[in-house]
Amino acid sequence: MARTLWLDDDQRLHTWDQTRLPFETVAIELADSQDCARAIVTMQVRGAPLIGAVAAYGLAFALRSDASDQGLQAAHSRLLATRPTAVNLRWALERVVRLVSSLHESDRAAAAWHEAGAICDEDVACNAAIGRHAAALLQPLVTGERALQVLTHCNAGRIATVDHGTALAPIYALHEAGVPVHVWVDETRPRNQGASLTAWELRERGVAHTVIVDNAGGLLMRQRRVDAVIVGCDRVAANGDVANKIGTYLKALAAHDNGLPFYVACPISTIDPLCAHGELIEIEERSAREVTHLLGRDEQGGLREVQVTPDHSPAANPAFDVTPARLVSALVTERGVIPARSDAIAKLLGGGAA
Ligand code: MRU
Image (cartoon, rainbow, N blue to C red; front, side, top):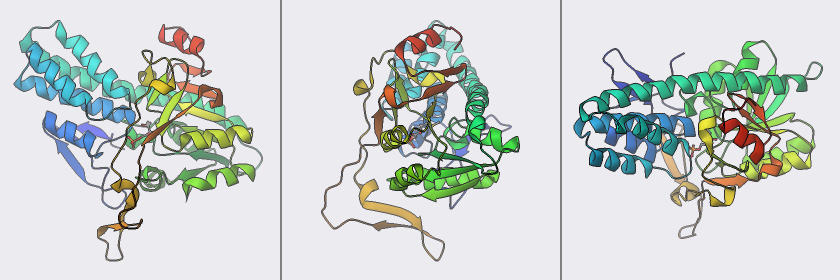
């Protein structure tokens, strides 16, 4: 199956427009740096690893028209400002900047383009490894005839990455290995990444799933209808606190109260060693319109936005929350499974085996 971000035979960059899924599967071309930045801002591309990969290409495009130091800095700042919370954006941009800074201006654009491709290839390999490690954690939870019951929040699937996904990677690995698995999909208001994207991609792959409203998870956990929770992340602080889509924290609390494992699928590129703890993570505040209005398909098949709140009621829209490390059972990285603790994270980032 195609990657989420791909080059065609003429080296033109394409991705899916995620604002139109699940109703329309539309590929869009990202033809220059502005297209890359706009796609991130409008959330045509979203999900921490995919944002990082698109930003890296955005920088490479920019260097084609201005490869001077000033041009590099300006493009870096423009792309960095597109979204604040997912650290993969900064990680990918800095990786490209580090590489090209020492090069002659005439070599910068090609080197950056190549590096963006390397970031994509590495993302695919990392996520496959996360899938293997997390599958090994989840498989022992299968009991008797019952399918493994996993709850996830938001979309940390293949559409949020270049391929495989992070939190969904073990689901695909288990499904492909013939292990019966069923996913409880939190709808994930306000933008419904669970209901629209996670459900879409699980259905595409033939994985059993059920979409639930965001508040249903606690009940299902109390009823022992959930074996484990696994989510992705946008930034993990050096002490193991985890920023992820708004509502994640409540799922972690409910999992803790019910003695259920709460796993965070976490590529090393999502760990921010410069951020001591979660309180320091900038939480993106998005448009109130995402709360007051809902987008969906009408009976004629057209996409329609409807208002769900009274006229003039104010709405607030923090897009992420922080789950304290003490509620995280483990971080599942491409190098293995580690506790969400500063010593384990420091060792991992230092190159130590998990
Ligand atoms: O606002 P979004 O849709 O970009 O938020 C995405 C999430 O919160 C994901 O869980 C996270 O980026 C991990 S994606 C592998």
